[in-house]
Image 1 (cartoon, helix red, strand yellow):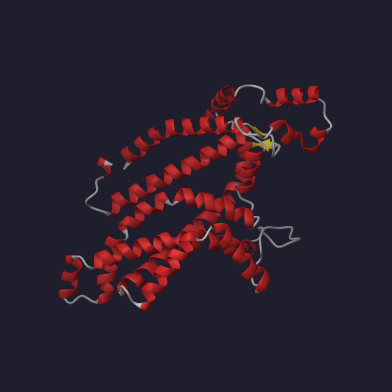
Image 2 (cartoon, helix red, strand yellow):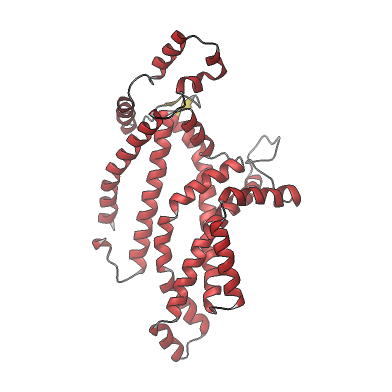
Length: 322
């Protein structure tokens, strides 16, 4: 296991270098002007000399390759630079927001995996039944629904029409303190929407995997030996049917991150979504590079986790050969 982790860590280095370089290149090609974004409305009445001086102070007058190299050498020492749009160190800006984004993604992913496994097993028990057709039809419908549309529908139904859940934010309006109860109540809608956006994939994968496992000879042999249906389902079919789901966990991380950005924007969740949008529109090179690196590292870590889980649960797979 240690060799696999070390090898993946070494391979991640060139990937991160290419991704951060690409982020600087794309930002440099952006039509947005970082100086005007930094100055705001004051840039409308400023003369060209003032704008040029501000451009020199921000360091955006140099080529993107030079800016990338300066940021990279500083990042290696732990200095991620200063965010021009948020007016604070990049490390501090990300640190304040990553906790809430991690909480949202972790809760949503856990709910999607658990609920998807349950629905998939129930549908696979009796293929072609009313329950199976209902679950699969609902899964395919949700799979095609954009996450922002689900989020807006949830706000209309639960916050505006039924008035049972808050429409957004982290705490109640006017609250001076962040309490666990308020965070939990405000987390239900965004986490639920994000979980629903990931739910169809796990449901369909589990249904297919468990359904195939139930038709295999080992499971038929277990039934022939007189084992109970629950033992056959949970002890034999489910374990074999969940193996494809382990690889799905890693592949869903990119869409989970993208969905989280949209959900955070709709529900005004204080995660990294707002910082990402502001970094892109203001061409904030240091913040944009740090957020891109963070997202890439999360995807690579998800793929590594999927491989580790697959190797630990499937005796036919050797981690040393992966």
